[in-house]
Amino acid sequence: MTTSLEQRRAAVRAQARTAGPSGWFAVPALVLFAAFALLPIIGVVALSFTSWNGLGAITFDGTTSWRKVLADPVTLNAIVVTGKIMLFSFIVQAPISLLLGVFTAGIQKYRALLAVLYFVPLLLSSAAVAIAFKALLDPNFGLGPVSGIEALRQDWLGNSDLVLFVVVFVIAWQFVPFHTLIYQGGVKQIPRSLFEAAEIDGASRLQQFFAVTLPQLKYTIITSTTLMVVGSLTYFDLIFVLTAGGPGYATRLLPLHMYITGFRANDMGAASALGVILVVIGLALALLLQRFGGRDRSASQLEGA
Amino acid sequence: MAIIETRPPSTVDTGASAPRQRRKRQRGKRERPNYLAGASGWIWLAVIILPIYYVVITSFKSQAGFFSSNPLLPTLEPTLDNYALVLNAGFTVYLLNSLIVTVGTVIPALLVSFMAAYAIVRGRGKFISFTSTVFLMGLAIPLQATIVPIYLIITRMGLYDSLLALILPSAAFALPISVLILSNFMRDIPGELFESMRLDGASNWSILWHLVLPMTRPAVITVGIYNALQVWNAFLFPLILTQSPDKRVLPLSLWAFQGEFSVNVPAILASVVLSTLPLLVVYIFGRRQLLGGLTAGFSK
Image (tube, rainbow over all chains, first blue to last red; front, side, top):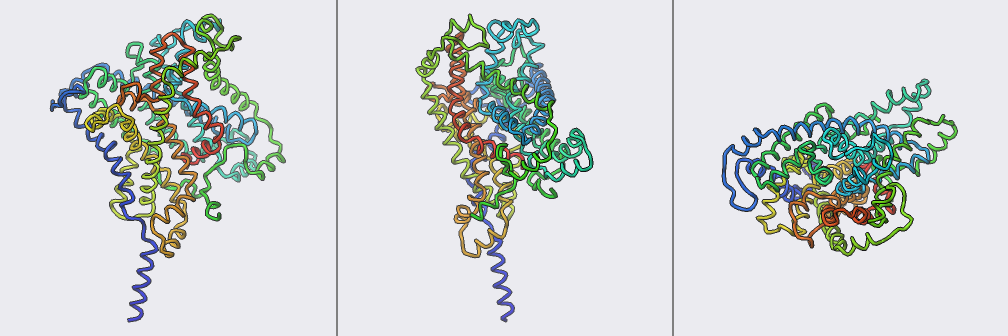
């Protein structure tokens, strides 16, 4: 009898010890998220099969919106432009942020000082950045005309061959600081002993970078790349203020195209269909990167370090 | 105190106060300076600073001076007229609106995501793992894609053109990343600490307040700052969910000023400076917290 009582007491104690909070603790967050994120995701799919001008009644309209959106050459163009911006801004941002991250993680005093200034763009809103560059790139009163350099005398935002690269540059200007910060944190977590060991083995600075820094930053690279790629599906305000999608359709990215379709052309059904396309592309990319990274995000990155 | 010292190891310091030991070792070794890196570093600084410099000096020029002067040289007759113009054009209302929306979003989002992270890390069961999956998926979905249904929900709730219309969806959108960062940090708290508090008969609330909060303070600050930056600078929700000037927030006001002042570029740029000033003050006084927190949060 006594043993079973003791056993039971031990079991109760063990249970009390491991007992966690009940699911109720997650309910407020879940309710808020369900109302303004999950419901809208279901809603965007449902609304893509309706016709609605934003004010009047919502009527079921079958696949009309979908056929309209998929037949519209502007949609395909928006997808292509979004893909180009995504690719180019990754090619530009990833190496710069990686190198700047390694650079600012150095212990030299001047690097710490530079880092303080590098991060200032983090504070600016996209609208502010767009307005600043719009003034700076003005073909009549901006930097180009007074520099005296003929090559800089361009209608940067009005030339459809140039505008894409200008947008990529402005995006890099705004977002490289954030990714630099991520890489800086990653580099600082690499154990010093690895570099010391490499040095004893006679590895040059370049060899150390490729043999120690880069492999150790694997997960940081995946995090940063995911944020960069999925983030490029959300560039809206910068483009909206900088070019409004123009000239023509040269910089009309998918989110902007969705906004214009829904809130300017008052075709909420078609805008919803574009929203669904955005969600699908975002999910596909995130899953792809996750598979590529081959890791549970929630696992600790420090193990084995 | 002992609790605070066992903070997660990833709360990196930004630059200046690197461990003394390490610096000494480095100095002893006399590393060959990396000139290439140094030069590139200064070039990037120029890229970053030039637009900011241009905005600031232009905002002090008169409109006539702007058209006639070299855009890269500061004016010899600085004027505050542009700032006066912006301040008289309702700037303080927009500033106040931005403050209300930011605080109103960040505090509740922090509170509920803190509770949810605690449940995810320490709780068991199907419901909790479902919650965890939902928030992880939320990270992968570009939530901006849902502006049409959000507009519908807000109008049907009768909230269109109110500050609450901005607060509710902004808070919901802030949850996935907040829950992720907070739960990552909570996972680093040794399980024995929870168990011993449990054995002492502490309630969940007491554990949250006396154990989890002190040990995850850097993460809480990170999440707070990150969300505040996002909400303060947000443009899309204000654009589609508000309309009247007295509900306007700062980023939207910049765009409105651009239409209002059209060719008065110095005044537009003055509004850019004024809208960034509050964050710059935060940055100057809380730089270490801000950067250290962001690094710790995302480099995990």
